[in-house]
Image (cartoon, rainbow, N blue to C red):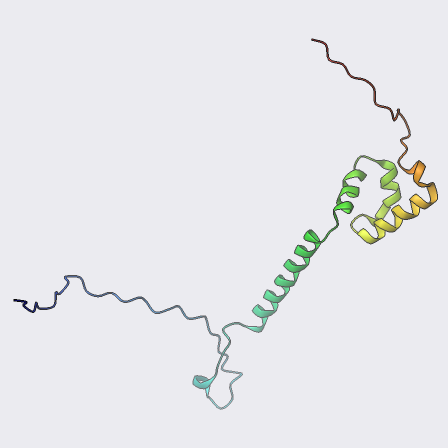
Length: 134
């Protein structure tokens, strides 16, 4: 008792996906000899655009490397220079160049000695006792 049913027709027409967007193609007819412009292949970008993209990418890579490969101890020294005049005088114009900063600090430690390098100019090394009254 099985009957064959006719195919069901939908009231909505079948929709297809739109064609994919094609990249912009620049064809310079002056560069093509013999009027064969229809046979010329193009990359979709101009040489200037490719050059600018390359420059931007190199600049971004250099900035990323500078941010992520800069030593932590150099950042600490740079932050300490804001408050300490003596350290600022030692480092001078080497801020931003970790190798030069390292050389200057090592030279200063050799000249002054390890015992006196961390010695504070004023105050006591021994901490004072703090008590809280209730």
